[in-house]
Image (cartoon, rainbow, N blue to C red; front, top):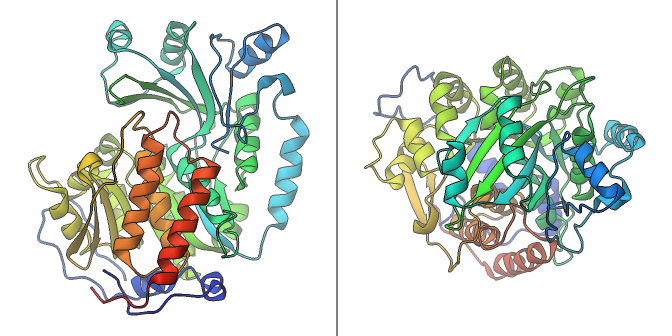
Length: 459
């Protein structure tokens, strides 16, 4: 199904604007008020760059410095094109200077700018006994302090785990950049950028360098004497993941003149839901959305986490109800937005949310997903997949939706099927990032889909 009747877009047309679909979404009339009891709801204003931690000789000391003094064991596998072992000494201090200088020049407009938490992920496989021993509830996400983080990392001493420039938003942006720079893609390369907060510590330098190598430009300056946030991702054999987030002293977002200039030069602004739980960020988010809206950009919001929605419910609806053109959520998050019981279907949540947001994406794990538009929901069946690690599935799905939109597709079913394939590939591997070779295959198949699409019917 589609939002507009159209033939296949050319590469030039796709380069000149985000897409006909986005233009149609942004011009939709105000929806009728929803009947759900949404508390305090405002009126609408119409390269997965991992590194293998090697513990030999001098490299062990380098690793301990990056991890803040904690050690581990075991060599983890990385893709050939992504591997950046510590034997190279990690990113140099002058790399930050080069990146900031390049960022200030930048393109005339960015295709996508993401605002989100900049976190370094430590991902490892553990068993249920490990979680029980530490008193960690399986399948949850918890914000921890420095001492709690240290306790978990010490317990992981001797285990094999990976470090990555992580965070929910960066997962989506890296996948989108890889799809958008695919050798199989005849369209112009997508220009992807991110703004967030990292410290002036080794983890901050690591984060910036890794995103840069994945073709995602991290444009924020490091916070002097700040510490970069981290997330410990513990995956059990049943592919369930448990996350422990340490926000660090640099986890804040200030809307200064540099960020305002970037927002005014983007076609699509993505706001990560985890930002809402950081102190004093809601005003910065509002200002960014206001400027993006004034300059004709589309605005997407990721729900991120049920507990985050419940803690920041009014702030979420202030942004989603007033500014969002696209909303990404899983089934539980969508129900939390609508204050629906767990017995209600995600299709119902997608339908209701689409009365307030022009395009709503709701994922439901192995049961598939839904795209909600104008009170209707399109079902997207899941592709065959043997789950290995479910962490990053929703992030990957979001990248597929955004890629289809930015490439000028108007076939919502086709966009949803692409997104589900991206998610299935990520779920079927260890790690949260879409690999370059997989991105090439997906981009090529989607280009063939667009070429064969003669017309699309209206919803």
